[in-house]
Image 1 (cartoon, rainbow, N blue to C red):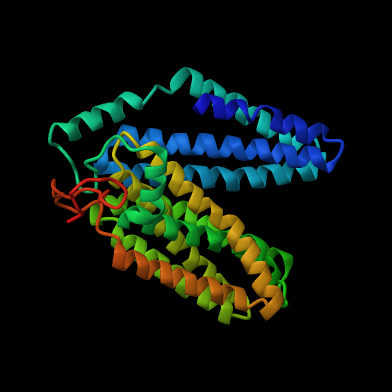
Image 2: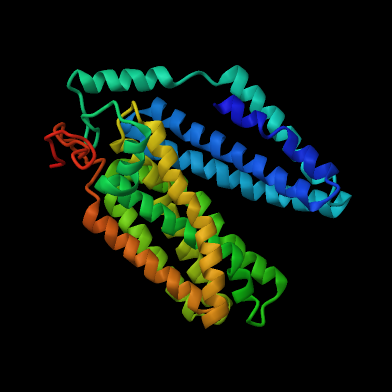
Length: 355
């Protein structure tokens, strides 16, 4: 799957370099979306397979920090190349180099991790079940989707929190530069404000993921969503550089608390036989937030003003945080209780429940 995902990336830089019209750009973005969805999901699942429950948060934090750190570094490098050599082809040659490197790493150095998941499943079957692992290993795709989206308390509340988290990110892409431009700020100040959020987020994940391995997932996710709500309220109330800088830094810190921890929680709960599918379903809901945030934020800003959109996101973030506090059980307690399991009674004809 990892190799297949990178094969989809090969035409993307070439299509953008030689694109004669906008249709080629749209088609390239479709291929890029397939590449990102397949490869990033696969790397997440492979790391979950490899590290085991004790360091799952650390692995997720490093994975997400590497991804968003590379995004920031590439944006700076691509901007420099575009300024020095023009928009095409120089910046997109980076894409060709990255794809070649990724294919080399995936084909030569990466090893198959599925045997680790099979071993994990065997350990559960022999009585070594950890907190959150389900008794039912053989679920259909529909059952996994239903559990992850709606029925299982930890999985479904994680999916909702992930959607709202990325809704905030989508809102920041589309509206924050416009909001910051309403004040008498320089272009460099606006650029700095826009960079603070992902910068704090990316660096913070290296620490928050590991922290969740020590103190548990639930309270870190709850605190992170509530921190995002407070940050968005600060941004909505703000009218200058200082307030907006404080708000974006707090927003980045709250996102760092949530982003790797949600993935680790999904890995804690899902049975190894359907863990990959659960991660995929979770990421459907989480990454849907990008589009939802951009569209809803734009509509509200158009109807009610620029400051109304952050207020909307603050309310949703607070609601998601309270939802986690009420519905999610601790998926990674300091002292695991072997008898806790996923409640599949809502979709399967079994007679066991989630303690």
